[in-house]
Image (cartoon, rainbow, N blue to C red; front, top):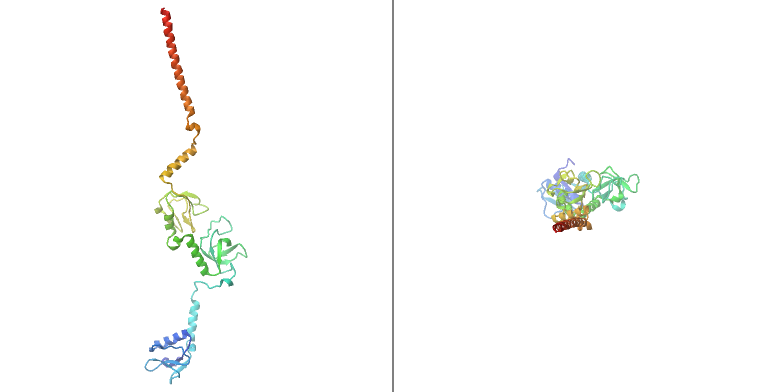
Length: 318
């Protein structure tokens, strides 16, 4: 074809849209002027550029032109286009759910609860809504699988299986939105913690086991909360406010001034319970009565002694 004058080629019409585009691009590149309404859809016509530069349609092959089938001429170009399409990565694998076996290699699972690993108290938590690609089903195990994203086994009961990535993504988004609608839209874990927790709150750390787990009282203002790695805490905190996709549980609200006084009084009464003797100091009264009685008896005796002395003195004088 290299010996043919490019402007002396007449293409047969075609119903193939891609070929029509190639014909149009070919002619316009050579400077051809396309009349309004002209198309290349009829296989009964030839299309070519005449001597004036206008793109012409004719039912007979004009003299001096070579008639060519566009599918033959643009075969290489179409092949290149197909190859390029095949090279384009598919972001979402296309798999029909009904044709795929559950938990098979290359399918997907979304974390809904629980732990990784075979131990119930594993510290490797499943972030809720995380998507995993199934590597194999743990040598035929009915309970656990292996995934590409982790070195640990995962129990099937903690996951929801999906044949396609699209399905897994949609479910993951819905799951995360239901768990925290605001967070799913705009807020970061740090922003949620600043809104959710207050100084003086008693909380249970977001980390369930090991160091920095357990209950602690938030002893700083939320403005001091900070991101530490993938978690949220504050300087010298005794636990995590957020880590591994989980937030700390609120156990008690911070005490107001009135509540503090009330709780202090309750604590004092618990340590020193009120008894009848505490409420009515019987022993002290008895002691006081004894003292009073003693004083009265003593005074009476003194009076008696004085009277006796006077009586004796009068008798002596007589």
